[in-house]
Length: 147
Image (cartoon, rainbow, N blue to C red):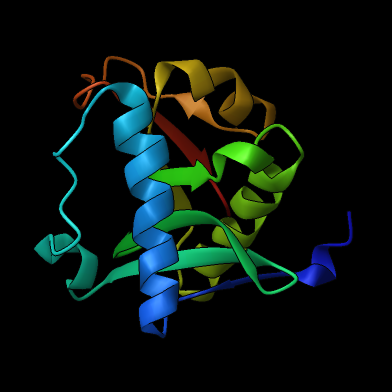
């Protein structure tokens, strides 16, 4: 899989935003039994320091994340790969590109609230459980130092 055929960027058209929200709604809400809960107009999506990002493969939207920057820390929120493309290495590429994005914003630490079934995936890429951290909703706190 050639990483040069991937692009991570902010949604910049109505079509991009539609794809961004469709992936998030389906993977992160509906597939978890939360129907009618997703809010496309949530203010966090456009808050200063928050970066909604779309992963494209050969121009086609395949994944999403929102990276919230808080000083030297990046918080990875709502990471998802399109359902029909999961378990094919795209998540690995998304994490690598997200980490590069965070570093480009001056961050040296990442925090993410990870779904219980994704903990092992994150551990394979150097993320560690945050000891004694409370769960956030159903998310398990994990972290990685970039420096």
